[in-house]
Image (cartoon, rainbow over all chains, first blue to last red; front, side, top):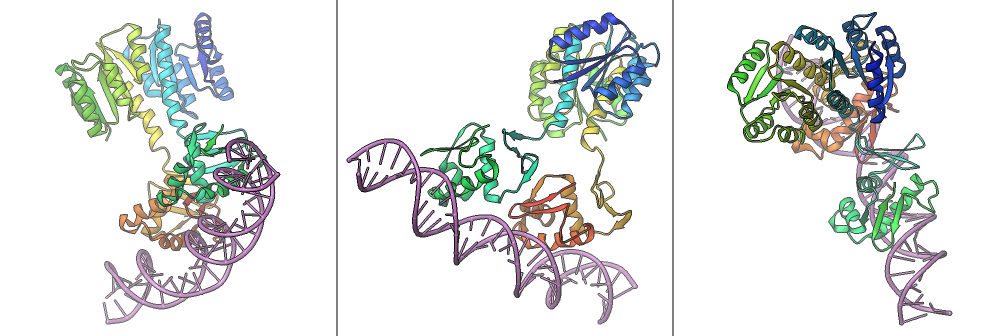
Length: 225
Length: 225
DNA sequence: CCCCGGCCTCAAGAACGCGTAAAAGCCGGA
DNA sequence: TCCGGCTTTTACGCGTTCTTGAGGCCGGGG
């Protein structure tokens, strides 16, 4: 769940935002002044901050600076000031966006989505397939089981990779043999039996009764998440 | 130098932006309709796009979609429409910011700086990779170990650089050979054994039991932090 | 009932890939 | 020309991985 820190000294704005954000599934934190905003940000590690510039204690730009000292999470500034100097100042201090009050809730939410989306695309660029008993990391080419790393041989990894890229789907014997052993060996289905036995020993909780590396007799194999 | 693609069908706006951006050291590309905008973007790989929504040929939202199909570079939308539905539509289509015309040049430039800054922090964040026993500085092309600088030959550095740019990831033998020795030598895997032995002697605490320059037999090598 | 095809398991020899060392080749600078 | 650093090549021991064959299990059909 995405968490948002709302910082404003006007309770009605905070309330309106809390209601709207909560209704859309965000986890909302709030603060009413700069000092507590910085504290809550450190504590709660929000994914995005909505910050009113007109706070009672600290100047808004200093709050931005205080956040930017240790984090690069998106900051969306709210402010009643419409002059461009204020916008420039805030943006150059490190804000990501600047919305003038009074603002449309739709617009603010859209800008918030944009900010979150941007940030998300940075972090989570790692395709990982997860099951109850093990985790396959396709980018790094690693398999972990109960936190422990499991070593796979090239052939074993070749099979796991194909299956993990087609989670839930049935992969025919011919396709597996073709892609791992090459077109010359599409009939050596014995290879598959040997290697699936090995994989189950390495990955399944109960190798005799596999729950993720499933055999579909006569057809092929399936990777069940 | 940061490059900006300006897309607008009003020549005076394009001219004004070109003058202002050039004066501030940006490399400016221009396009006057959606179709050519997409083409120029593919060709010139700009660092940020300033996009007018009211183009003569393609709807602005479709241009955004066309860009987002293959890139995540920041898109700043310019538009005369001030209603929030337009803003929401554009932002949800993948735009990063939305500025209404007429706009203040100061503000637009500030928003552009913000967009570029955000993106920069993502890409070349910290050209330094650190492990328990040595430090690789990609910008200066140097390796230090216990404060002492370790001299690497060009070939050795080539290998270290590729691995350090993919920390944790498994890099295939073929890729290493291809990038260091060229496409003619993608089968000389013996080179890799010789050079990894050398690198481990220079960088690992216990060269016989490497903890950072890991061999994955039959597959490739991995730089473990 | 037995047969048969498909599957699982086990084990052993062959083949392969790795690490290491050392020699040979290459090239630019003194 | 010689020297020193860097790269390429060769050789060998060793552990791992792949392949292959044999045997057992199970369910469906004759």
